[in-house]
Amino acid sequence: MVNRSIACNVRDCKYHAQNENYCTLNAIQVVNHTTPATTKESTDCGSFEKK
Ligand code: SF4
Image 1 (cartoon, rainbow, N blue to C red):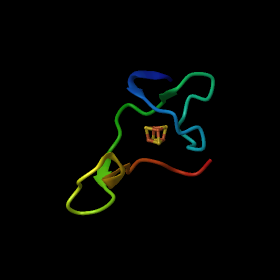
Image 2 (cartoon, helix red, strand yellow):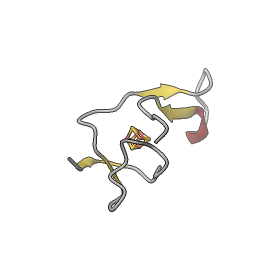
Image 3 (cartoon, rainbow, N blue to C red):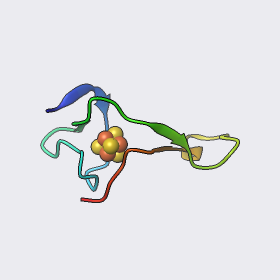
């Protein structure tokens, strides 16, 4: 089910709603990509999975 509280543009993820730019999970885990995080790019969606 589309979760309109989690907007996401990553259509390559198996949890993406596809027809709308939202996630279908109830919750996601946001994680550090680099530590310490200093930019947006230093963070990631840890719940991503390849389609
Ligand atoms: S799990 Fe993360 S990357 Fe995948 S659709 Fe949800 S928010 Fe986007």
